[in-house]
Image 1 (spheres, rainbow, N blue to C red):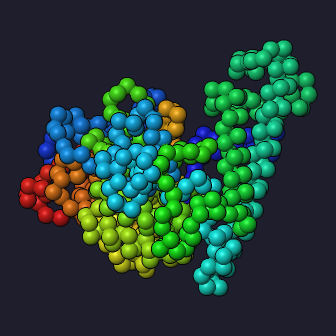
Image 2 (image 1 turned 90 degrees about the vertical axis):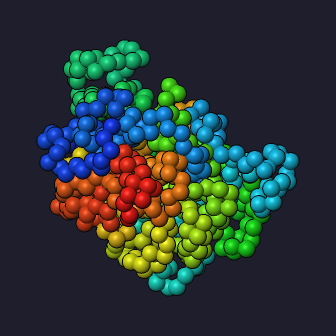
Length: 545
C-alpha cells in the first residue's frame, strides 16, 4: 500500500518548486448536509487540541466529520463495564514499551517468556505479545518486483508488473533528485541569510528586513519566507526533507528494485505455505522508520485520559501485535498465517492496514479470511491510498473479500476509505480509494495524531489510519454487546453511520465528483455514537439488520 508523507511536506515541496520556476439521546442521529453549519470548520480553523482529536469529534456539534467518539463516552458508555476484546494489529512491529500502549497489550498467559519453548503448544515459541513473521527483515520489494524477479504468474501478469515497476522506479528516482535539489537550495539559502544577518538564527521579521542586493539573495529570502509561512523553523523543514529523501530512496533501493532480496535473512520459502517455523516471538518494532504499526495501534487503543499523547477509540482492548508487514509489500503467506494466528489465539477483531496490487497466492489469504469468518472474527481492512475506483478491475487492492470484484466470499470483512476534517466537497481524502461495491464505509484518516516509537507522537494520514478508527468502533461494540456476531457488528457500523448528501471530489480531481452512496456500499461515514445505540437495539432484539 502507498504510504503517505505529512501533507505539510508535500505542500511545502510544491510551493518551493513554484518559487524555483518563477523565482444523551437514545435515538440515532441523522445528519444531512443541510443540518450542518453552512460554513463548517476546516483543519486550519481547529485548535491544536482539536487537530489531535478531530476524528473523535461530532459532526453536528463541531461541524467536523469525526466519529462522535467523545459524545459516545459522555452519553452512552459513561461508567459502564464491558468485556475485554483482543484486537490483532497485523502490521509492522509495534513499540511494545510505548507509554500509551504498554498497558493495553495482549499477553499470552500460556507461554513462559524466554525459555525457547512452545509452552502452550500453539505452534509458536515465546509468543508473549504476538508473533513476528518477518524475523530481522524489514525492507522489501513490491510484489510486482518479485513477480518480475521470480517470473511468477502468466505473461499478462508479468507484463502488467513490468509496466508498473518501470513507471514507479523512474518516478521515484526523479522525486528523490528533486527533493535533494530543493533541500540543497534551502541549506544554501539558510547559510547565505545567516551570513547576511551576521547571526546563527533569525525570524520572519529579520527576513523581511533584508534588502537583497542581487537575484541570488532575493531567491534565498523568497525560499525561506515561504518555508517560515507554514513551518516553525527551517531546521524542522530540513528534517522533513530528510524523511522525504529517505522515503524515495527506499523506493529506489528496495521497493522497485528487482534485484533486491529482503527475505533472505528470514530463512523460509515465502511461496511455500507449508514451510513453517520461521520468525520469532518478538513483534517489537526494530527498524529505523518502523512506526506504522505503533501509529495504528494507538488509534485503536492508546490509553485513554492518561494525560499522555492521544486517546484511542476503544477502551477494554488488548492489542495483539503481529509483525507481518514490511517496508514494501507483504507476503501472502505471512498474512494468511498472521490471520490464522490471531484467530487461534483469541482475537475478535483483526486490523489490516496494508494492501497491494498483485497477490500471487491470494487463495491462501481468502482461505484465512473464511477461517476468521467461521470463528466469528471481524477483519477491518484499509481501502488503499491511490485515489482510485476499486470497482474498476484494473485497480485491485489485495486482500479483499471477493474474487471477482463483485461476489463476497465472507461477511466478516469491512473495507474502509479515508476522510479529512474538511466537511463538504473535500471530505473524502484525495488519496483514498473508493468504490460502490468494494468500499464499505469512510472514517477519519487524514492527518491523524497517534503514537510512534520512542514515546513520541505524530500526525500521519492514509486509509491505514481510517481502518483502525473503525476497528476501534467495532471493539467498543464487541466489548459492550459481546453476543453480537462479526457480521452483525459489520452491518451495524455500516447502517448506523451518517449519510451526507454533499458531492465529494474524488482522487483530488475537481472535475470528478460523486456522493458517498455512489462511492461506497453504505454511503456513510462511521459514527461510534450511533453504532452503540443501534448495537443495543439489535442486542435487545428491538431491531434486525
